[in-house]
Length: 269
Image 1 (cartoon, one colour):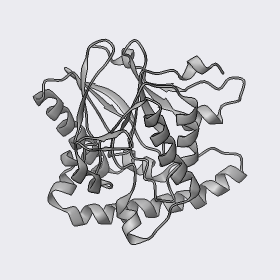
Image 2 (cartoon, one colour; image 1 turned 90 degrees about the vertical axis):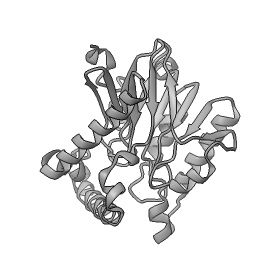
Image 3 (cartoon, helix red, strand yellow; image 1 turned 60 degrees about the vertical axis):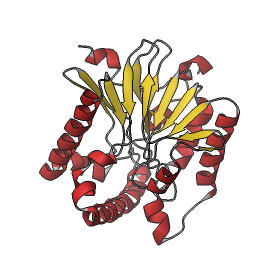
Image 4 (tube, helix red, strand yellow; image 1 turned 90 degrees about the horizontal axis):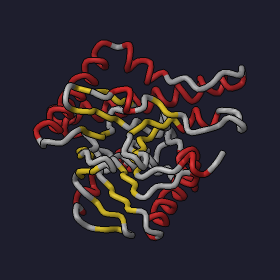
């Protein structure tokens, strides 16, 4: 595998949830050690403050992720941190720099081909968080319970030679209310991008990686590093793609290349 296979102009990651047992920190470390990029956007929920308030969980791999990102910033990678709802305490430091990492409420990213994208975690467009915050905490507990069930279930799948399967991701696609929530969220984020006069939006929050065009707006969600282990990458020509790192690393070594999901050109107007 040549190093050029992993050369990007910009990388966007979100919903890492460091501090939780569901975080796939080892795979994220593998990704950021392998890839080369000039700019890194941390699009919220990098550290899970909600979980850490209720019990400390911080293995070495989680510390290694933080240290690696700080080293990248010291070596000249431009790192912009856009906090989410799980790491909202960082919003008290908007405009400040920590170890060469800039904390921002949101950002406007200009691609190599001149298009402008709103970069936001997206929790402010979540109706549950806006109107029933207590329900969001209940939902978070339920989600982590599903992830725990996933862990046990997938141990048996691995022993039988099967790959990872996500119950929570399956339910998102099958439960009517969850589907409606995702649709409402996507429409709200897209409308904000349209209001700001940009070409698209890059966000996170709902843990559902996707590139989708809504008329004049390109909606991009970079997924998460709990279930899908996906990132958004901008190539040197400005094309934006979704990368599935877990499936890349499960491929045979002689064929392993960055698995590109839904290249943006497929969604050209």
